[in-house]
Length: 167
Image 1 (cartoon, rainbow, N blue to C red):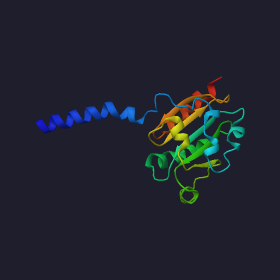
Image 2 (cartoon, helix red, strand yellow):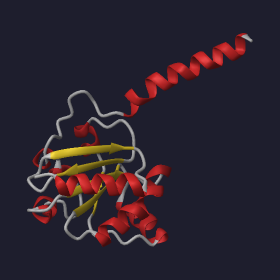
Image 3 (spheres, rainbow, N blue to C red):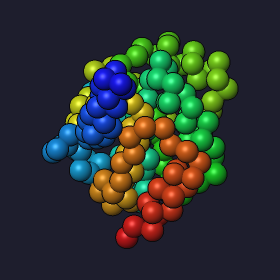
Image 4 (tube, rainbow, N blue to C red):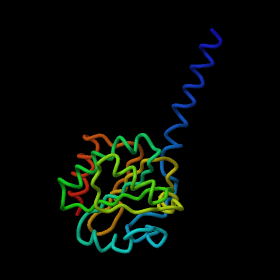
């Protein structure tokens, strides 16, 4: 009986603590697209702001070792294909180009704008403590939504509808 109570107590603590561990920090510095530490990225990062000019932008933070990231990538690739009015960027967190490219090739994913963030600068600026993280920027560059954890088809569609409705 005591073991059962101890397990229930531990689960209750985890239930309370887990959302805090998965949330962004209390005061993330990324509140707008121009706050992204773009200079820290490798790849065609300089075109990120220009690529999104006048369009909403979705920035997904991911890594090849992250199971939830791997689960949501096909959804994001399909959304990128279906929604040309929205710019998408995929910032790999902490891995080298060969690792990221090998994963994308082996998975058959066709992503247009893959960047490397070897120092995890975007995740740090956003106050992220977990992957995947998806940042949704309005056409004017304002951060309007974030999603921590794997997106589902429904949650991604809802986020994209909200994003395109922002004026």
